Image 1 (cartoon, each protein chain N blue to C red):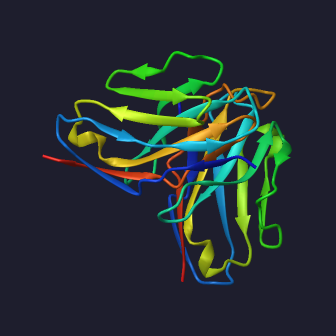
Image 2 (spheres, rainbow over the protein chains, first blue to last red):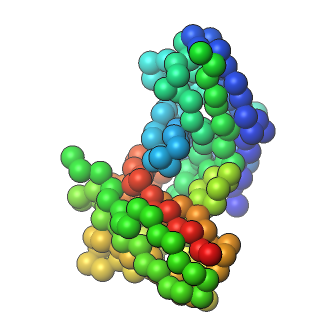
Length: 111
Length: 117
């Protein structure tokens, strides 16, 4: 079974600064997809960014970017120019035929 | 485009009682998922449907949980009898693929919060 590990339970960042969230995963597959989801207190899961494993280029969505290292099975998320609205729980997720989540990282943004 | 709809949003029941949650996926989405999210943890897949057939229910506690998807659209998740450890948010999600291909994005509803006392 695939496992997703997020080693940082909590991260704090100053508004307008940059924060990086770590994620590693375990798989024997070569073709898969990776995602970062944001979950505010309302518990709605919001897709932040996705990465196809066959693409070497790192995905970017506005202030959010990833560092995908396939050989190391690492998939980190960088939030640049952090805003107060970025405060939430962030989940790393892996998918081949089903979506598996890590335990999450709580991000707080200091004004 | 309407999102994934879930009801009820909040439910409080006593242990050993029963509860049912309803989910209406995004129109046209063939795949429907039920996840259980206990406070402080990541979501855990309970069951995955493709149209009205079950793709994966390996983590569904079948002695007390059941789920169905009639006509390949709406779905109901039932818990009977409920235990204290069933207190969680139950997230329904859907995706448009018909073959369970990973590339299709999964969209989530707002969740149904269950408290068992």
